[in-house]
Image 1 (cartoon, one colour):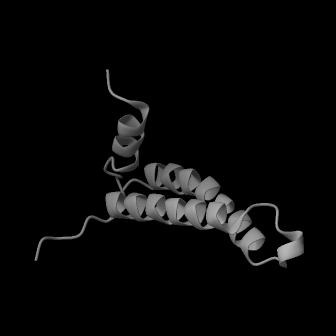
Image 2: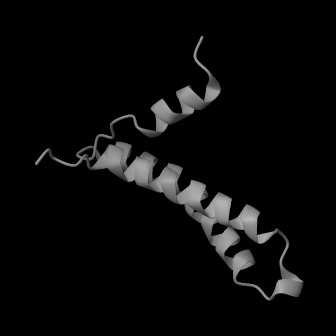
Amino acid sequence: MKRSRVRERERLRAPVETTDPAALAAYAGELRPVVASLRALAEDATAAPSQRVHARSFLRRELLRGIRELEARIDAAAPVAPA
């Protein structure tokens, strides 16, 4: 049985059918929670230190994790052609 992180990584990197409008809309819908999470983390990170909810190290780690997830999903939708 595969570990949950491996399954999640494979799910993120699964190819996306960009020519099918319904599949593309579903794919965009899956990106919305990632972007919303990044927005909330960025707002917390840029708040005054006395108003922050999370520690800077947590915010940095989670922002980078979210960016990596977006990059993986973008790569799945538009794979880079070999040079």
